[in-house]
Amino acid sequence: MKRLLLYFTCLLTFCSLLHAQTTDTFDIAAFKSPAGWTKQAKDGGLIFSTSDQQKNAYAMIVLYASAESSSSAKSDFDTDWQQFVVGAFSVKDKPQMEPQKQVDGWTVTIGGSTFQSDLGTSAVIMSTYSGYGKKFSAAAIFNSQDYLPVIDAFASSIVLRKPVANAPAKNSSPNVSANGFTTTNFDDGWTGVAKEDWVEVTKGQIRVLLHYPKAGTVIAADPEPHVVNAWNILVAPRYSNLKGFKVVSPSLDYQRGYLGAGFLTDNQTGREVFVSLFRKTGPWIEIITPDKNTFIQNFGFDINNVRWDSDSDIWIPLSKLDTYNKFGISTADFDGEWTDRFSSNTFYTNIYTGLSAGMSTYSSSESFVFSAHKNYSWHLIAVNSAQGRSTFGQGKSAGIFKVLSPWQINFSNLEGKPKTYNAYFSYIKGGKVLWMKDAAYSDSVGYTGYGKK
Image 1: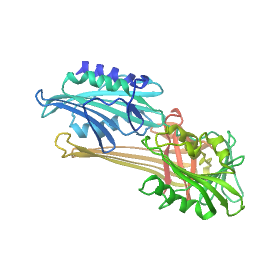
Image 2: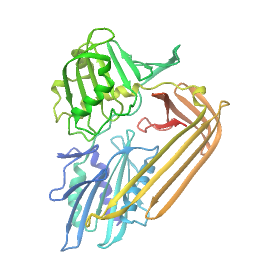
Image 3: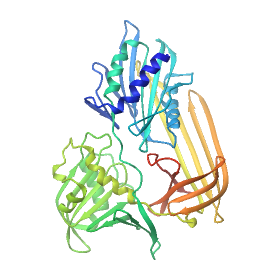
Image 4: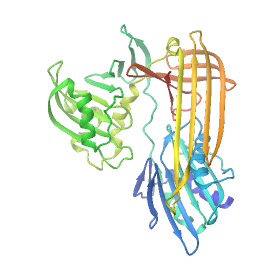
């Protein structure tokens, strides 16, 4: 087992540095699929499998969909190991761990173990990549070393794409306007103002509306009806005389982007403008420019040149606009209880029979209760259930909080020591979301959002 673990450690650790020819993609990974193996998409993952009945041998390679990273790479591995390995294969032993490695900006955590099944002793080895606010896991499960060359070739072909950074745009000090809405002047020249139905972001002749989530604007449909539906709800009521409308949505990206654009007459000013409506993973974003050429010069592409196989990198300048929904904090903003709740279910299927192999559930609840006297209490509860067993964990702290700047808050005691968090607010319809992350971690670690109870 140790020899197999060391062998596969080498494969998965260096795969993101190699740039072999890739022929397939899943999530943030590109790779060359193993020839002759069965490929199956299942419950947010991708499975490659093969077997030899005469030798009573089998092998699987499983890629799991990326998710938001926690503040710890080891925590990312432990969570995925419990969800994807323990529940699916009834692995009882703790994984043998290899030292963490840094590869191309990713922290790689690798562990493996053996387990018993109807086919005898098998090995399972999982590698979890943490970075850029994301985690991504890959695993190999096999009972014969005969499959190692194919696993080697597959791992060597993997290239991980760095997701668009989730870190908010840099900013200067915020200002509070007379009507109570917060304004942020960003270092790159954009200005954001929170309004009733959207955050309005402006720079020069460009006006951007970051629409708040609204019921009915995201539907299950093909690209054109999906965009047209949102357009009719969010855009059309404020304009007239639509001309040259077009919808594009390249299909090669795991998380598709949707863009519709056309020429309209602004009902308020009577002027013709070029309006684009875009969405990928966040809210609908409306971009208003005086003409089409202004859009092309600032965002780097012409909608008429976008094809079904266009690279998803074209969306990066538009996706960045969502980071301007960022506003500073003050002591008075915190009064009350702010909570974050998370839960996930993973369902398993026997690869040979197709029958259910059970499920596992992970859930957590974290809350901060702030008072006007700068006191706070913190409580975290986490539960993991699999194979009829549940494990529980919790933490509690209390103390004094202090707003150090519009972008940082300090807690006198969290888990036995003082901690400083980077923090900001984003607006939604009728309220705000508090975003915080431990300032000790790099920008690659994402923020956690809390809603006011």
